[in-house]
Image (cartoon, rainbow, N blue to C red; front, side, top):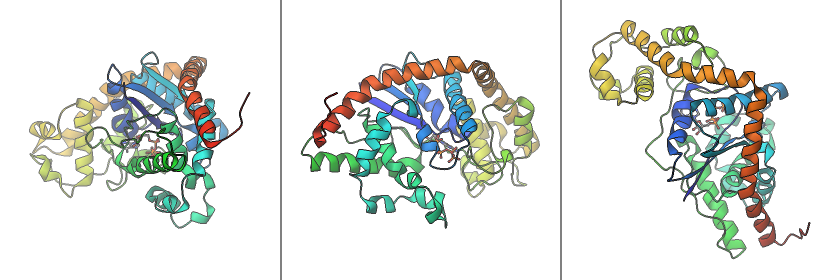
Length: 334
Ligand code: AQP
């Protein structure tokens, strides 16, 4: 069975974007068609500063969110990256395979670093090499990621190909970036041109998976929109990014198409649509946030699940790392 790998950075609490764009799809991939490996990528989170207490909390919160959404530790391997040292070890080996010129082309680094590239950590620059290690340690062939991560998965292919070529082996598989149609991209509630992010400046721009019903309703009521009423078909949302985002969120939460949402609400104003969206969001998210809070009250339970997941992950990753060391000529006889 083909193996899937994907991860989430604990650089803050989970947002509705992470849920609709990633976790919900991951839940659906569990089953006989794939072996699923899901990781809380804490080593990636520290590429920008993380307060230690917040990192520890966010790691548990992201894990709790995945569990509460339906990632089942009996069906999937669920763990955090720092408990499997092979990730950092293979990343070092890949740092010596990847070329500076490849890294210089990564648009995400340029976006995140902005004008301050000189002040960024070396880790933020080398991020794609750690991501290649995450994927190739499991010989994963399928990586469900958003559009923004496509370039990194392509770089993973380049690293695998160069490694295989330089050492004359056929060892690392060439990974496919995206496995299904375009993933849902949830946008910022205050600015429809930016994506909803964990680490965005204002809390009002995102819905957190732990927000209570009143907070969700307030954030949606205050979400930026335009003065027009809703159009009768999806085409009518062109050049209306904020309106389009709210309709798409409704559709994703209700598991229907945006056109069916507009069949019902086309011609209506925001005074009717926003409360309906808030009700739907609360209905869908409340069971998840209740379970997240229960788990977060018993962090030992979360830690035990992650530790068990790490053991299962190592059973796959360690032999692959060992074989890599061997191919490269390292002496390791202990
Ligand atoms: N707004 C979004 N819409 C759809 N999918 C999203 N993802 C993140 N935001 C959205 C998807 O969630 C997965 C995990 O992402 P990540 O946490 O590893 O990194 P990110 O994409 O950088 O997430 P954030 O929330 O924006 O974090 P910060 O603010 O720390 O950079 C990925 O599959 C991603 O596509």
